[in-house]
Length: 557
Image 1 (cartoon, rainbow, N blue to C red):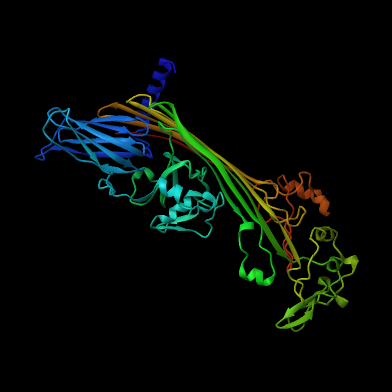
Image 2 (image 1 turned 90 degrees about the horizontal axis):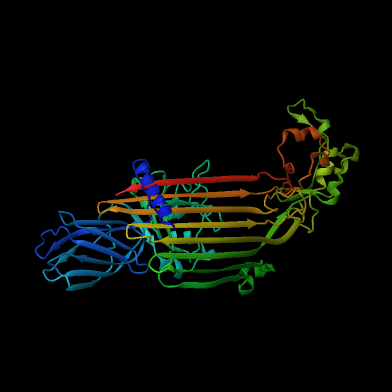
């Protein structure tokens, strides 16, 4: 990058940090180290140099203890670190084995011994597990848990079951849009907020957060923290819990993995009761495959990480319903019956045009002779609509004929997703990172009626493309001033074309064309709900919805 371009970018980022610092504190997916430096007599040691080095990526951050001996180093990406403390007249201290997790405030105190700086005391210890500097309650789900624990459908949000106070709502499932339905400490299921590298991943809807834009693959996710109570004011727009996810970054070593996860009904046993009834095991096939990896572009400076994951699922969809027989379509109900208590009685069809007042109160109607409706009484629209009922293909109930239709078809689901992240340690004072996540989910529901009157609305492909993008800049401006600015966006679209041909017209049902002037295109098949039979037409269809969130936040320490 040319020097003048680099300088312009830095000045612009600093300007944004100062401009928005009071208006919009940032949701930081980082950690912090703070503590006090004393000597062997517990006297404060001011002016001590504290250097924190990233073991995996060479990131270097420095601080100097103040007059009271305290130091703080903020905005550290989660990872493995080494801390070195130096002060003239004292032996240097180096602590390794330090692992920081998302949103952690680690307290590390050091007691220096009198001696030469060239002498070094090596300490190996883990970071404190209790954050004594914050009252926030939460649980971190680590990288090891994410990769090692079995995950049906590889949905990392299922690992939130490990967190006290988490419970799924009835709608929670592995479906793309249903995985946001869970409760934290009794809050509403649609009031939780999820952050991906500090950028909101929760596009708002009319009733809270009904969906998430990105669902990172477990191989692309470093860790996440579920904050259940008393979290900082910067997370103030939610009435539920907060999930703070951190994507993986590349390191100085190349790492990669290829994977394939298979589920197939050929390897499953049938249900005991299904076996006893002679029913076959429904077909199910799921393949989840992908590749993930990262490494250095420029050692200690520039790193990348990328992941692709695909899902191909084919599941048997079974439908059992009740439809009019060929004779009933022709108006012949002479062989139709109904149950009254334990008795099976002939069905009676009454002539609506014979309705008259009953002297004893109420109304009277005459039944059609022998349960047959004369053809001249048929309504033209009704006759055409009746032709869209599927013909029964099994006997059904011996008396009523209920459940006289059975069909089974494949219900396919295809998902492709890509996650990427680039980290740039420009200098000791400047650090950038950015990432993009994309996911496209397409479910093609089988048309179980095999015509345009089917009640489902996903037979032409229910497509959900979504994006999440984020860009972060950290500037160690002086030893006493650290600036951070972050921007990003999340977008979720839902596209469900209706299961009708584009040139469908109400005139095909014998209705007047004038009705179409009152209906938006594309026109769906009207809903017909006749007692005793399954529906025709769509009760609900949402052809196109778009939810978007844009974030711009900054902070100064």
